[in-house]
Length: 248
Image 1 (spheres, rainbow, N blue to C red):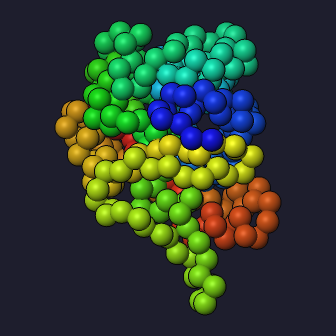
Image 2: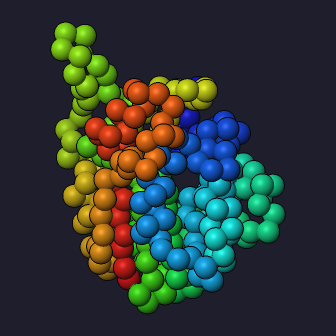
């Protein structure tokens, strides 16, 4: 199924996305990036936290269980409908991360955008909105797909057995990308490629200081949760994402 814009796409896959992430996140999150996310976030008890691009609300629910006062926003009405159903005690708003027009200036201690920035069309507007809604000295934890290693474009060489990545465009060129459906999804995936330096410049231009950075991968204490040797090898040998901790 093809879509002209990202809102229609995410509305269409909302129910499938709930299956994908459930209440604890998918395998990549649980094995690789969530430990880094929680390390960067620190103790959230009592903090006002914005889950920016919350989707079906799995992370909002986990934050609330840890004592955070959570607000979730997503531009997909169907995603928010599911989030409200699953977490009726949490405030959710239909809003674009590029605007956050439903949120006041300087009202959050912590903002988390978990696998969101590669899906927003206007990177700079989103980062500027993140900066605006954070309190002075507030922290943003941003996790997104690694721009250097697009997982939907990887393949194994039949000649050498080496893992390869196919690039259709100049890495430094900003491109709207459409990838074929995967797993149980029925729709093509829309996302936006930017270089790692594009992200870094956007953070700096908005006024953020980068205080930590990581390319998440599975740690030894989680090896047992990998369901097979191939998954373990994948999680230990290549990064699926990047994680930034920024301070206002």
